[in-house]
Each structure stands twice: as structure tokens, then as C-alpha cells.
Image 1 (spheres, rainbow over the protein chains, first blue to last red):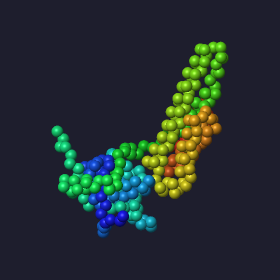
Image 2 (cartoon, rainbow over the protein chains, first blue to last red):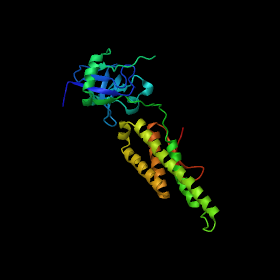
Image 3 (cartoon, each protein chain N blue to C red):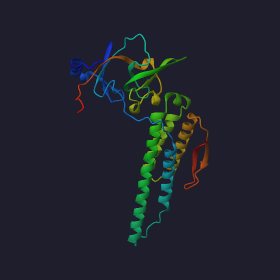
Image 4 (cartoon, rainbow over the protein chains, first blue to last red):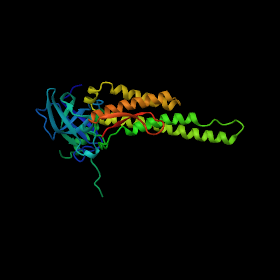
Length: 107
Length: 172
């Protein structure tokens, strides 16, 4: 079912500290532009898995604009450095809100 | 993007309806080299040769039988380990390094990887030198594509050690 807003549950910590394992990301298909720094929910060009990463830069060519995606926690991220840039059609939504899980404060 | 426990609780109540977005945890170190896959394939060939060369025990000599079983078990164990290592190394390069544009430039790449998985498996199932050589040959093809992507020329030469079979070497 198509909905303007898509909520996904995050698995993994490659976007920490922005979003951590178990948090919810609220994303929307309604966006006017995508710029470096935006966080996207998209399908992996390798196997179609849903991923969440941040746009590092845009690459425009004859095939249109492609997006180079990276995790914030780059030492823990499988991203465009390994699977290449993504096309706009792979984008599920632009993240507008992270609902964080309550976590115990470190002692 | 502040923490909002009320919203989180509301969203959490419908958790079953959400898909998972993976923020994968991996260590893309950027170090890729098919060398270990090649050495492993060569080792599989060598182990089959050694298995065929182990002296057959005389039935009346239990000590020879023990030596035979012992040496054979060791060769089989090394063959198993290296066939699996070969498959693992190729899977990592294929999964983590190879990108769609590489496949477009080398349309036979997926089939080569598929063949490596198949001949790697057959080399584990049987002491079959023909399967081991096919494994080595496919790994050589995979290595040539890998180095071409890297912009490095290669040459084929026989390994300067047993089993003296042809291997792809980068010309660095």
C-alpha cells in the first residue's frame, strides 16, 4: 500500500549517533530536493535490502543524478564505497524524523 | 530530531507493520586481493596430487595402515579448508568490491563466480583433480578481471612450486 510517510525500524549502528539500532526513522516521499547531508531510506542496488544512509554528494551524468551514500559511523558502514552510487528510483523516502528508543544512561 | 518517547511508544505499538532499514555494520577496509583465493585453489590441486601419491598400505601391516589413514586425513582436511577459503575470498571480493558497472563491463563475471562456487563445492565432495583444475582456472579468470578493474596488467605463469600450474600474477 502506498503511503506518503514510511516508518522503518533501524537495525545496526552505522548511523550512530544520529540514529541507533532499534530507533524508528520516519521518512517521506514528498520532498523538493535532495542535498548532501540529507538522510535517505533506500533500496540497496546490490540486493534490494532497505538501507538508511546519509547523502555525501550528488553525481550528475547523462543517466541523471546519482547519490553517493555513506554511513555516519564510517568505520561501521557498508555504503556507496562498496556498492556504488544509487539512482533516484531506489529512494524510498527522505528522513524527516528519528524517534529514539529510550536507553539507559551510561553509569 | 529530539528524542520523543511518546512518539517512539506510539510507533513501537505498530512495530510489526514496519520494514527494517539496515544500517549495516561491516568494516570496508578497502583491502581486496584475489591472491589468497588463487593460493587456496592451487592448494586444492596440490592436495589431490598428494592424496594420490600417499603410499598404499600393505594389509598385513597395521602400522602402514595407520600412517596412510593419518596422512590421508591431513590432506583431506587441508583440501576441505582451502576449497572453502577459496570460495570465501571470492565471495567477499564479489560482494564487497564488485559494483554494477564492473558487471556491465565484464558480463561473464557472475557466471565465473558461480562456477567457482560449484567447482569449489565439487572439490570438497571428491578428490577430483579435474574439478580442482577447473576451480583454479575460474579463479584465474576472476583474478584477471579483478586486476583489470584495478588498472593493473597481469601475466600468466606456472607457479614456481608444486603443483606447477598456471596462475595469474599482477605486474605491479
